[in-house]
Length: 414
Image 1 (tube, one colour):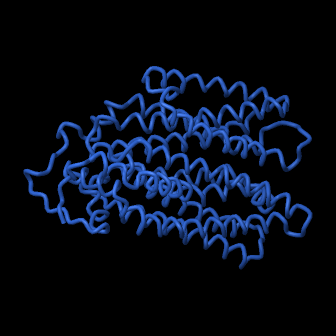
Image 2 (cartoon, one colour):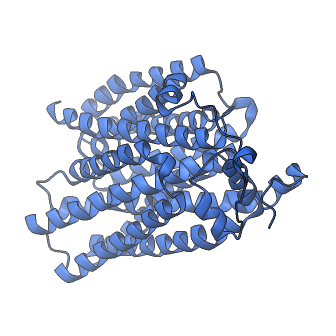
Image 3 (cartoon, helix red, strand yellow):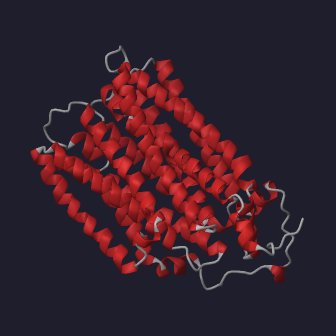
């Protein structure tokens, strides 16, 4: 089979583009489905483990392992088999989510320190899977086209919105029945388990065989990328290009130099998630003041955040309102920190209407700025550099989340 790029590049790049965007969206949903299920059923875990701050502890456990694994992956990124990395991540998500279902069934939904520790171990495994999938997929999609990255991040936000909507439905359906919270939690985890199985199939058999994906991966291979070789083999493409055929990336652009060239994007993605995760979800469960909404209040707030995070990630599809200015992105990112005193006083005085508005804006700005940064940053680089930059930005993203969930504990001193 011919290994060079096709003569009519434009035509090939359009073949299967819509399908690739759809698959990227589903893979994005699967990248966070398990994690979102855990945090969306937080009310169930608060009932089982009322003295252990489940949302705060589980979030911290998750992000500690995700960040640690991502540091290793980023360092070794250019030598890692991307196909094996992503497949391992989705398989780990599937097995661990299934294990959580079995744990609940075996223990009959009982609390206790031992069961809590086991849940923490499973959530730690989610963090490792996250580092596999999120960094691997973003790096892979970054060497293709911005629409794929946007679709993947849109799917990640949709995962949160869908789990929140299902949580509200299951809470209403099971609220008056015995073990209603438990039934809803098991349903959530079962749905996530099936979704991860779908993602395994899509990534293994559908995505690598789409013409547009073959095109970009072949292009990346000719530019010197070694991470796509297994994906090309899976698609039936043998890359036998000689040394002189390979368009190697500029040797001066090592990871350190890539980071320095894009330090503003790295800082922005770090600060975006630091702020968001210092408020969501721990603050929304424990620091929203006195109100009359009962146990529905945190679920509604989380649903509002997830919905507007999803909407924010689709706004940049319209180029006229997509922010591409580096100074503009930095200013917008820094201005979000005005939300900290706003949430403090709103939580202190318990104003539900204002709290809903603040959560809405937090989610909207989180989604919008994330997609702007992640789609603009890789422009102008060759495939291997785009993959490396995608991994670096995901590392900063996870670092911001880790810092955010750590700072979230400071709200308990309020």
